[in-house]
Image (cartoon, rainbow, N blue to C red; front, side, top):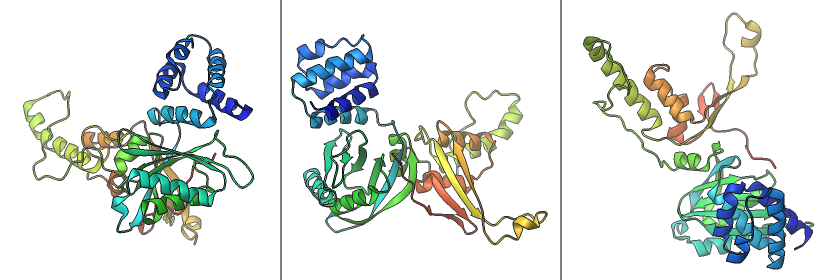
Length: 345
């Protein structure tokens, strides 16, 4: 192995937690049983790394073999960075018939027409997701495997999820995706998060949705202490209505673990006591961010418990309704994002 391949392996082994390393190597399947058993996973990470370098040199592994190992780890542990959602637009008549082999061949061909030095590896996951690893180079340098872009796409859907993509690389990736999936364009879905499954489930509506009903089915909240039968009867209906409206707005059951929502305000400042600000021609600009380990769950609880008013304001209910967590608020109401948001390396 050359120095760059050794450096890639060193960084990869340091990245994978020791308790996951043995299982990941087994899934990789490129080490013999004797080689796998010769690695002492109770040793320090440095010692394990040196042992694996020696084994990989003995097996004459190249960087293409090591990228397989990285993909196995990333697919099993996708919540390592910020993911951004995109939506393919205007499908052609034969877009629904694109299958995996055809997509792989055309994506690689189109991207390599645009970039002279690029490394592409594509793997289909068990949940039907197509995982794409792109190591970028240019006319004068080889692909940089230390900073790859990962792309997740479900064939026959318009949704694409990307992490570690620079603004320079975005148009190249977009063109390759559009051509290989038989679409006309791709747009930012204004949805991002560190949990890939959360933004996927939100955008693709893969969670329990609750629809309006004349007779709310949920009863009072759990663990509710009955203080008096008459008071309980009087409070039961409003509590059930709050829970119904909260579930209609955000969903029922287990919700996607979205971690934030950002609102960019571009509105006129209105306060008759402050003429200096009110008379400004330029809009008042600020950013409001809601953050939580599970934002939708937090908002649903606030509404159902009465902390937040119901019906839920469209500013908050638009998160699951539109499958977005980035909004621009103007005097005319919520609008699309006015700027491109990308993960910079």
